[in-house]
Amino acid sequence: MMRAMQCWRGIGTVEEWQAACEDAHEWRQSGRLLLERLGAERFLDSQCLATLWQLRQGLIAEYETESPAKTMVVDFAVREWTISQNNHYSDGISMHGCRKAG
Image (tube, rainbow, N blue to C red; front, side, top):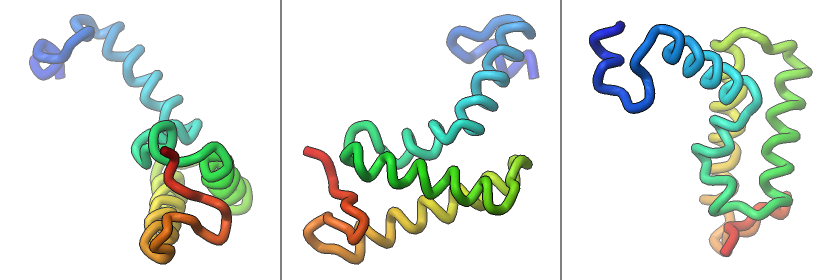
């Protein structure tokens, strides 16, 4: 792993790698990974962002999701729901008020 890390910016030691892994875990666990990858901060309005976060948190609570695999399934479900809403409504507005910001 150390050989691969030599090419990464900002990571030159095992400690820096461990810190990056901890940050990545928190990023995924909190839902920031999903929302940032969906472009929530740039392309979705605040009401939609809140809706997506609530859907994610509700599914995690309902299915008592703690493992990475189960969290990935929840994130995939929220992602696919978001995509289906954007494809279903040609004006970019869904039944839940999600619309592209801009």
